[in-house]
Length: 291
Image (cartoon, rainbow, N blue to C red; front, side, top):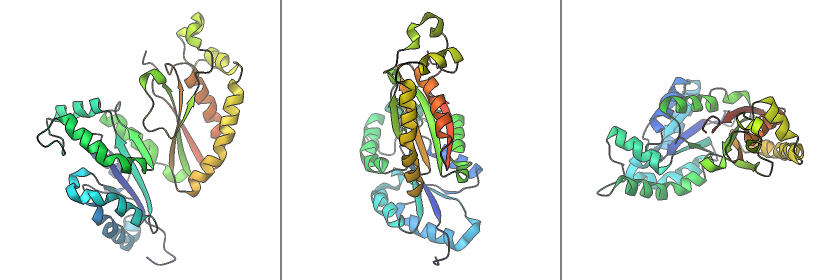
């Protein structure tokens, strides 16, 4: 690679077996990526070198790397770090709950690659332990527990289809704490300090998307002060993300059930953050309609 040439971009797709790596690979191919499946980590550098020689023929490169590589997978962290000085590397880690993974393996009637003579849960536990350090250093963690293959493909499209349009693709995700924290959240805001519209009879059946609920939530003491200050605090964060080439981020905004407060605040926060330079904002409501 010459001094004047552009860095080759590489997306490494990894994560738990059964979390949707094949679906993600297909979705990326549909978006024009060149995808290599089940690549040993030691082959990442030769793959990047080949792509650089190919020039514009391979503008978007993705490699699916996982425990199917056996002993070769043990070198994945070293391989990724060795590439970072010369290559724009991002790691997408796909995760899911143990229950979701068990159901998926049972549906396809295949053993877990690390199961051996044990149970499915034994294989999953072994993989989680082996994957923990890689998960912690990943740029994007996507929880696929509640996604079918079509929803997962849509999520990948949302994250990567228009990624060149902004420095950071930001998802603001409302959720309910009683359903669990989103596994892929980079930042979490807790709105349970505000009064719950659930206990107001005329608001109970409505949601944070309804004007009456939104007005009620935003009128509470501390609500607008919190939102305005939170949005201001995010400005240097997203500027830093762009400098560090972190292209995707998720702010999870939570209340008890994910129906009223978190929804209203997520919408308001999206309006404020969409004005930040280089940030494209998408709003999703994970638990809306769940009750």
